[in-house]
Amino acid sequence: MDKMIHGIAAEGTVRVLAATTTGMVAEAIRRHGTSPTVSAALGRMLTGTLLLGSTIKDFDRLTVKVECDGPVGAITAEATKEGTVRGFVKDAVAEPPLKENGKFDVAGIVGSGTFYVIREAGFDIGFRPEPYVGSVPIVSGEIAEDFAYYLANSEQIPSAVMLGVLLGNTAPFVTAAGGIMIQMMPGANEHIITMIEDTVRHAPHVTEMIREGATPADLAKMALGIIDFEVLEEREVSFACTCSFEKAVAMVAGLGRKEVEAILAEDKQAVMTCGFCNETYRLNENDLRQILENYGKDSV
View (spheres, helix red, strand yellow):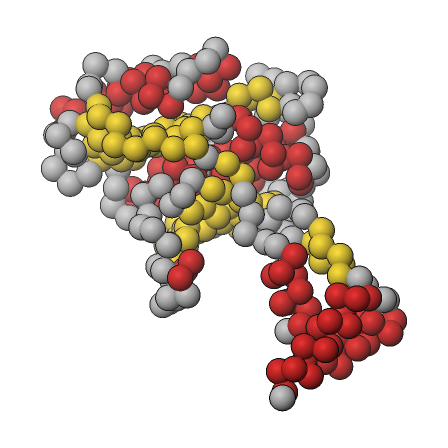
């Protein structure tokens, strides 16, 4: 089961977030049928967004988006405070050649462009003021570095971010996935920052540790070295979408009576596919007739 921890270190001046996301990423690439390199890029984006999303308030929503000129075109991920995440890519099957070292060329598939973070307050309870939108240029396309660059330059939070996806040759293809995000809060000691930077610089790949059974706490311990930390919260995390058959019905109803009558006469059904999770909803003749009947009820 995938898990995430939220902890603090150095008397609350360092925030540590760590997660194992193997199952979550496997579900995402199963739903979207992504190529290997796109799978690596989407998995990193989902994990990074999940970690950053754990810092938002209840009922808020966090969206991270990369709009780029690389073959993938765009990557979008959305997270909630509860530990769920969903996401999609513009081109699921783009696949550049491997790098000379045999690794996936995530930077190559992303290219250059803009990295956006959108924070929406009170989204789940209908309180929706203007969202906060922060953006920075893509600095590497490797995703982890772009999260760190955004946090340092747009939110003034110096951070170390490590994200990884390790793929195998057989289904479900994801051998290991996870990540760590360490944020330096106001008052962080320069010596502590230097120690963490040095530890992270020499740290093993997170996916190798996860493949060998590492927990989120193990990842945090690896990244912090000799610095003690306290786990404030641990929760299960998953790929989960907010779409539903009821929402599909509401969207069709929102087209208006004439459009629904035309769909019923011409196609006998309405088919809708969610971009975030690739789930398909089919409204048959009875569903469409019920929508038309409800128009009549609403006018009474």
